[in-house]
Image (cartoon, rainbow, N blue to C red):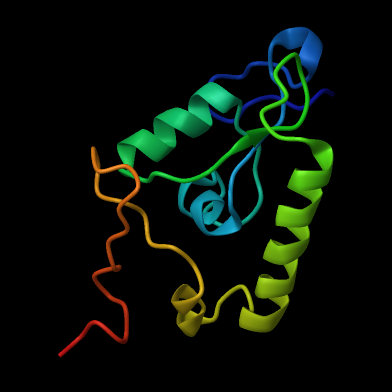
Length: 122
């Protein structure tokens, strides 16, 4: 049994037009089809779910014909993210202090504090 996209059932693999699109962990848990850090979505369905939730984030193709970042740069970003996750914990509500907030729709490059951020409440 081969892996498929949860939303559109496209079979996984470069030969099927389903390369690996990697996004930050904080964004992935908000769009994951399982509601946690698991699941499989094709790049198109990842983008649709991000759009539907008005999330803007970085992303990189790690397979297929498009190399959006070098493998060494992506490796560095993943290591940093893994260190942050180890420090923060996956369910640590204070972890958002180190994580960029999604920019409001249509305002690329600007960061908005999360509505429930502990330091923005009065």
